[in-house]
Amino acid sequence: MTAMLPDGYQLVSIDEDRLTEFREVDEFGFAEHLDEETLKHLTFSIPFDRTRAVERDGELVAVHGSFPFTMTLPGGTGPCAGLTWVAVRPDHRRRGLLSAMIRDHLSRSLDRGEAISALFAAEPAIYGRFGYGSAADVLRLTIPRGAKLRDVPGSAELTVHLRTADREQHEQLLIDLQAEAWSDRPGWVNRSTPGLRERLLTDPPAWREGAEPLRVVTVHRGDAVVGYALLARKEKWDEADNPVYTATVRSHGALDPAAAHRLWSFLLDLDLVTSVSAAFAPDDVLPTLLIDSRKAKPVIVDNVWVRVADVPAALTGRRFSTPADLVLGIRDGLLPDNEGTWRLTVAADGSATVTRTDAAPQLTMEIRELGALLLGGRSVSALARAGLIEVAEPSVVAAADTAFRWHSAPHTPWGF
Image 1 (cartoon, rainbow, N blue to C red):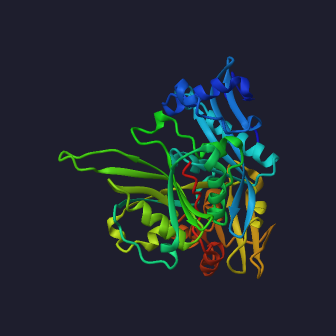
Image 2 (cartoon, helix red, strand yellow; image 1 turned 60 degrees about the horizontal axis):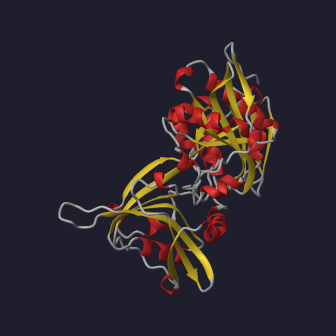
Image 3 (cartoon, rainbow, N blue to C red; image 1 turned 90 degrees about the vertical axis):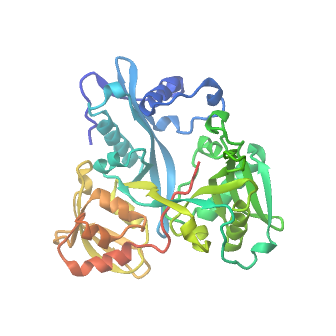
């Protein structure tokens, strides 16, 4: 797969000596600026052997990189290239630079044995044309103070501590808690580099927008920490001098229902605060426990996007919910090795084999739809009703839907 570029442009690898240039392209692309004081708080998180750029006349004009993730799949895990820091200088747009970088990224991912690529999309309209499918959602809730929760046995016995975030005291503790709370959910990716681990507690004053320094809430069962939240409150008073503070939860996790109940009982009863905002998996504990969910303001947005780079490796890396024998037609304009017809055979234990076949496809889809289905959170039936999956044999739709679905909604719950 050749990454075609206009005359005068070339793809180059980046090392630490060109990090300032790399950041500058990203700043031009995202209309932002990191001052020297903010940069003191930041550690570059991408391994330099995974950073790439487009250069013209010795100047960097487009950049991208990737993380070496392990992604949780339904019933398994797989190596995943986490595409990030994608930017093209505005004065070099519409020249095919992004397309060339995506081709380069996918080619290099395959060379490393990464059958999956994933990303968070700054603009969701961009990445579908490169084969990325929206594979998961996030539920963002703004919850009023005092919102009541259903009782959970054991919650009242737990204790809560509130502290200012401290890297030495909290970083590894919270990373371990986050992994234990979330790592069996499809879509989870590990914090695979030192920079990503540090990012959890990075809190430059310039990013606070008037809020307090980052605080840590921990929930304790005896000596064990069984839940946490990272949050910051922002001071605000109305015209009658009443406090109308807001609290934003950056990241949270709990190891069991009692811990989740105790955590959110505390967060929803903070003095001066009128509302708490946080992000959840669509089937998370807190939305289920709310007695009056209508008082919480919901916004559902896309979460992680998935691109299948190697069809048989990606499908055999996950488990399926029921046995199945399906013939799938796959269209992929970027990776010809994925094109064609594949037989997906699922055994009683949920494991799969995937082989080429000359049989007529029962279901035909673009590679982006296969990426959307991979984590088990999208519906074959819904995609078929929308005309995004072509159905030659209607009788197989329900079987495919059940096989691909998983018992927990996919979600990448970083919240950085």
